[in-house]
Length: 226
Image 1: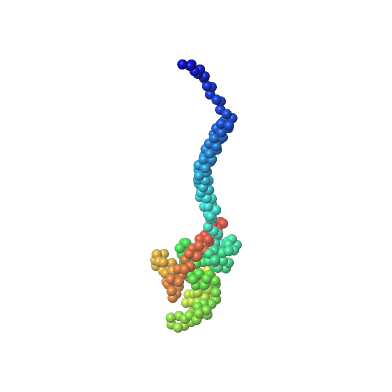
Image 2: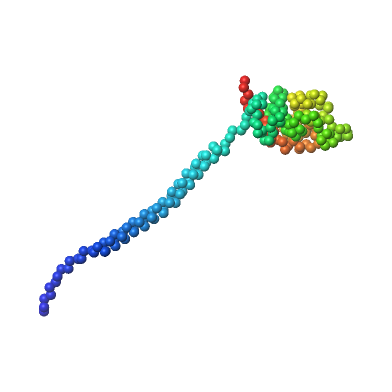
């Protein structure tokens, strides 16, 4: 038998090409991992951004939209807003202020003041006019006689003299005097209470002015200097 010489084979060192390939594989793997991490982080960042924006809106919107309601002294006509209140302005607001002051002088609170302004809105649009239904519409009384209504409250001759009915404060005092004599007016629907005082044709006519009258009376309820 011939003897074979066994030679110990030395492992070949990795070639440059395989080293580069392994390094490239590791780099690509790292890049993929980084991209994956970034992609997974995006929803978190977007969610945090959305929550932050929502929190800011919750805080800022009430601040931006909140506004204290208008309150001026009923005696300070110079402070009345030029743009008016609910569309009522200038001389209309001044007449409303006279009605409110007259109500206060007769110890009537906010509910009575609102009724007075409602009545004048429904009768004359808060204008102190020297004519009435006869002149504008030819309306007569139930007995066929021509109506004689004038002034803020369109009061006829049996309410008082022409001078009283054409004076806003006196006309308001006449209205509130009859309102105070109406038993249980505070428990009535405002338009019904006014109807009982004014004795007009439609008992629901004044209801359409309740919201505006409330806004006007509240706007004229500011503190006055002592």
